[in-house]
Length: 591
Image (cartoon, rainbow, N blue to C red; front, side, top):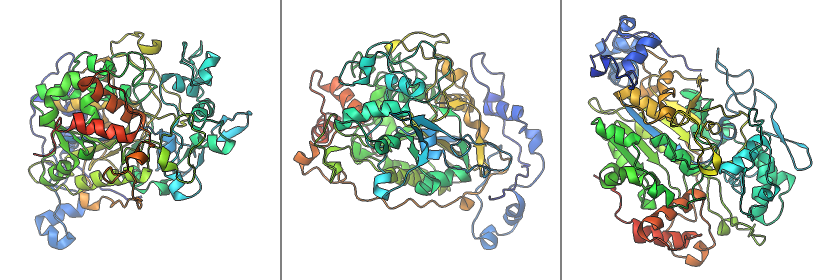
């Protein structure tokens, strides 16, 4: 493990308007946080401009002595710019459960992973199906689990409690009924129904029951060597081993909570009132509105190949007026990072409709006994973990190389990598209770009262002020993003959910920063060509390829807004036509 100098800084912190007594409902500023944590100005009184030998080098010729010129430190430990990358549908155990072997945890720390215990689920015949690392051909591993597990509320209830109630919910060709697979006693979830639910979902997807080998895939996960970018960053910076999704359900409600601290009472993407419910939701304040009101800068960066931004569409009632001004392409992100022009808050959105780099598992056509197993991409939403790893590596590298001395740079930017929800994939930790947005339980869609969090999702933090090998055990959730920005900029909370959250300032555990030249270089694995990456020429082939739930939802919102009543495409060829017909020109791309 790399040792880092933690000597203190003599540079006094600059006065801040946030040093005044906080507003009664407004969070304390970051300076208040550092005082409480023992990083006050008085505690930064000894030491040089930078730690150890680098401090000496700054007095002579660091370029000659060390081969690089250190970037200037902040006046106090912390960060000024927050960059978030949110991927899709993976659980903590699935991605990071094997990060540290038993006995190999960083010194003095605990890690709640799979190697630290013995975990399994019962199979169809009651046999134990253990949590395990995937084996087999690399291309097959990188497209697991296949098919996609169940991910919305009734599925998650089965995964947590092992119940299917009523029995008709065990056949997904039937309309789901209350109590939505929820048992009478929900006080002690055992997380023992993942295999049971996967059998139900896989049966619909494949048109037959899965074999024991096939249904064991939901208990599988990746070794650190299989995900070299994610695991390298987790080990060399910080990993949160108790970061939970906001809702025990699917993408839209969790992405809504991430930026609005509410999902308007919804727990599904398109069930109930249909996809248009997101457009008719009230224009509640979001992270973006709070920043705008405070005169702070923000941007959502999306892949222009996808034409539109899911973040923008999902929160359209609140932020549609910013679609042209605050949404930019990934090319602009890399340019902004290089020029020191990253905003106070940046949200990076992967590709979710085609040529996926969002890490969402593959989706196959339901009830398809004639599936082409020789060429399965013909009838699946093609997805490869390595494409997501590549995106992660690109974003990290651009931040690492940010060297502006007057704007954003590696020393004053924190990068948070997380996932929207667990995606129906096994995790052994039961979700804790949650503070509802209003402060009191209120029944919403499918009678959920928003007083339980979703399952753990993989989350890592990258900062010059985070010690290598940090494992942060505190309970965190998607409301922690808004809490962080509230503490950083003195913003009012959005709801009780984020007001009571813990911010990511707990990842600031160094008083002297780590110069980015000493950060690890990440090397993604080879990413095979994606058959969806090229211009759409073979429409017959594309019509065999279904859409993932987020892609269906994105296309559905677009149609609900611009062509109400039009049929929702169930394949990529038709979805692409909708994207280009209604999406072109809606969002900004470059400055």
